[in-house]
Image (tube, rainbow, N blue to C red; front, side, top):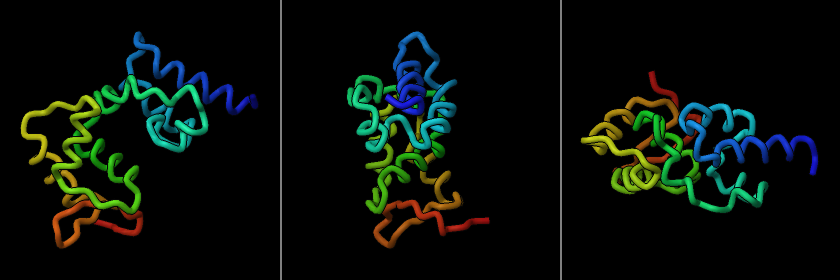
Length: 130
């Protein structure tokens, strides 16, 4: 195991320690690993991260808009309906009254987020909003 891999493994272990405040360290772990610890790329690079046991907590402490942007970024070229985005957020532990309305409003003017003619959202770094 390389030092980089050991450091990554340690970060993942800290994230999955149920006594750890997940919301507080999620940003640090993501920054150090270069991707969300829930992404397929990280799950493949660190085999012990294949268990989805804490996916249900992944969006705790995040704003609905930030969590939705993360969902769209991870979706890649796949376009998602508002209902699909909300379903993924709820599956990640985010429970907010009126979430669909909050997500829709938050994504409308968010840089990097687009909406096609069928009302499906997608992420593209080239989209700038002011």
